[in-house]
Image (cartoon, rainbow, N blue to C red; front, side, top):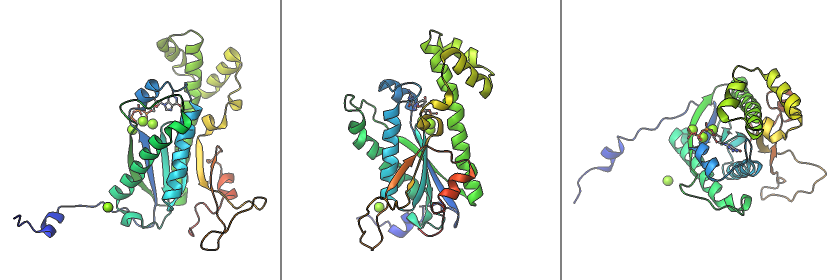
Length: 259
Ligand code: DGT
Ligand code: MG
Ligand code: MG
Ligand code: MG
Ligand code: MG
């Protein structure tokens, strides 16, 4: 018979509790997706289906975890913003992060076939890491999201140039040397002059990433009443500029207190 007292064993457990009244952002990121995207022959630099699969998983996260009020995704990552006064898992970082990251990973596997009917999932299966960071004000939260969207733009512009150069016959190291030290303006000119591509006409999902949030009720659509008498809303995916003030002015409810 084991005489160890449970309270004694439990006393070693330590929970990092996240600062109250701050915006919690859980950012998840695909593990080794460099290899995963090669192995599954994702289109370069952007695979529309792979991105749509990520977005679909993010929609599922928002439907499952009602405290998540906004999500932003690019490449193999997604940031999930929890409402400021969320009490999810008592604001314990490990509980929040592990719940979201495991739900997302399971969804990714479950939904895979719906997006890649001709391609099976290979070993090792996809997995994601996750972290939680608190942002103390709306302004700083918006700076965080702007940072991710700027990153999306910089990487996408670089990758678009890089893969156009490679597809036109340059080796990867030649393409890399060619682009070394070039500015945004020069890359934009390169695309137009050498490949006849106007960067602005590329799909918005590639240029702007994906924003996922609960849409406003559209009076032209019919909504059935929910159990609480309120009409149902649905999660929408948009590819828009979230750096500019205008997005947040058009959607004031997203970061509102009442959810
Ligand atoms: P990590 O996160 O440290 O485990 O390592 P990775 O390999 O996941 O690196 P990360 O997250 O910095 O970069 C994402 C990788 O995923 C990058 O090598 C490009 C690849 N990737 C993401 N989305 C796409 C896509 O749509 N098409 C292709 N071809 N590759 C993609
Ligand atoms: Mg990572
Ligand atoms: Mg990754
Ligand atoms: Mg990544
Ligand atoms: Mg449990």
